[in-house]
Length: 321
Image (cartoon, rainbow, N blue to C red; front, side, top):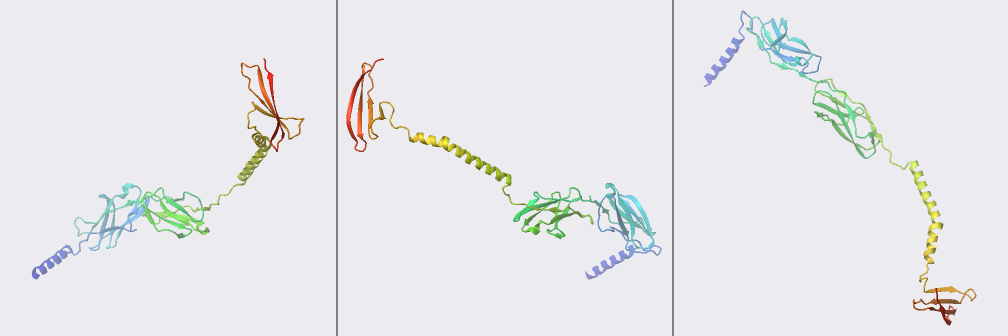
């Protein structure tokens, strides 16, 4: 079994040596490698890019040919195995197709092909806009800042700054705006805020406009409002002063001196010729339809304190129409 493994290993080494066999004293080329010099396949419109193609082994000189979707773009000859550089300009979406390169020398039949590469077009981001639902704040209040680039290839990475110091970690968004909530604790929190936006293309970061919160003043009664309230109180006092002698006092007197007994049937009249402590009371009897006379009586009270009645006088009076 060990012997068979040794034979297999020897066979593989022999096969590799056969592939590298020199034809007419020259070594065959290995498969070339195609890669971007910039290290990234993310590009923007009208960008210049460079692709490198080379074989690690083989006998020079070497001829390298770059293809785009199986169409020849350019051919370069190298006297040695150093990389061959192809310069391109991405002018349209058609320049984003699949690229390959082929390496050939005099001893390679049909040439050797590299791996394939494809570019990704990045749209430069627009200047981000930093905004907030409110421009005024007071101490002890939470406020929100939003940062958004309207244009640019997604995703877009945002970060917030106060002055030149970052106040958030990077956040990656696709279509939505990035937001941060701040707590206004002191007057130093009313500085200038900014945000930065960037996508996958390097050196494409852009900063927003500066944003400042203003300190909201406490609400106080304005001077015109105070004057208006004073005038209302003054008019009310004047109205009340006018109402007291003309409405309130007469109404009070009318209620106080209103007689409690009916005015018919029993009346009381003071006798002007008698002393103040003498009062004459008169009582008139109602007249019946069949009678011609009415009776009335007069009671004389001399002393109000003693409640003594001196005399009672009855009279009969003829009543005719």
